Image 1 (cartoon, helix red, strand yellow):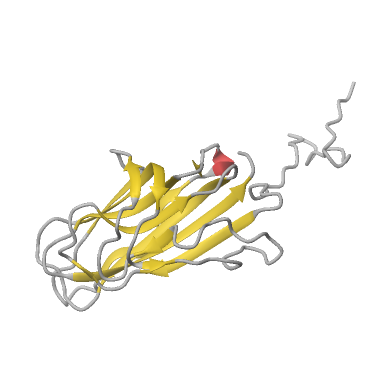
Image 2 (image 1 turned 45 degrees about the vertical axis):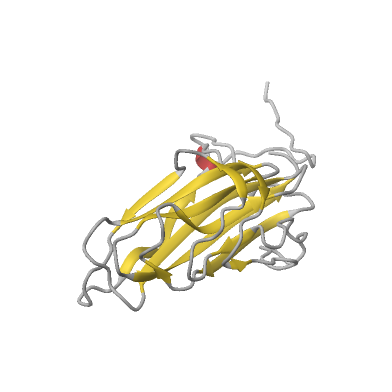
Length: 224
């Protein structure tokens, strides 16, 4: 006897073809309900090579309760600006998670999303608090009050161009620092209240100056 699978709206599931009769599936974004999906892209100012080890250049703090921020993708790029690097360690960048983030960071450019950054105009305004997302200008960000995990979620070693004969690229545009292939069963980074992540300049060669861009895609949901 044939078995019918009926969806939430009463529609009967269909199959394709006459040989394998595979079930038809349409992929959809995360079900955000009355909340929404958002994206941010920004650039640092001109950063010195003399940043201390593990200096934070981007911060994303989620302060809302009872909702969650689902981080789908974080991309980064970087290039030399006015001064090439001295030979030395490569440019090292990581992404590290934080918990117990009770006080936001300081310095840099504090982002005020308000009703902006929506993937669709009809979505609700982001629940990100003004200043809880920030990007460095010409110095490291102040850490705020939080507990950084001791291991990185993601790490990049990139070249530090040392002569003007090179093109000045450190990290290519669109480089993925973090991504969850949800359709392949990978779990995204899900942030509860007072959790977040930082992008850090772990180590940089001496003398040079550089800029970095950061792009973040996330959804805000009531449950996940």
